[in-house]
Length: 86
Image (tube, rainbow, N blue to C red; front, top):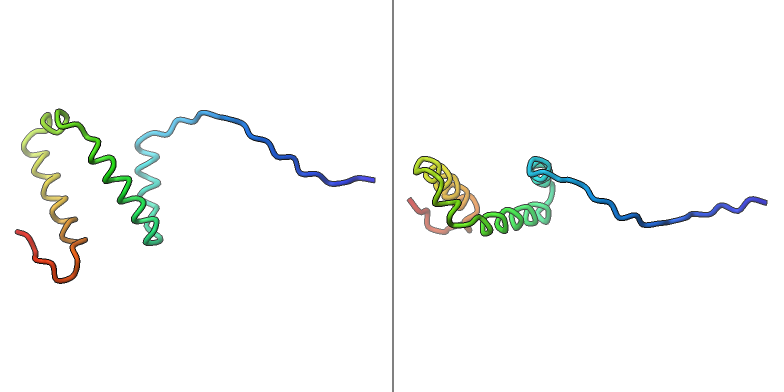
């Protein structure tokens, strides 16, 4: 007589995940509000972790492009009726 058995095991492995892999995963994570909030939270954590000396190393044009982008994004997420900042 044969009795089917399922055997489970755990194996610890190390994998390399590059920034491009993470960015690609975030780009595909817009299918639900929860996934979007998780992605936004991860982006916020990354932005908060950028050291001030790295930001200081950006040139004026780079800083302006980034600033303009985030102001536009902030307006998209502003609550309805919130004043629009110039």
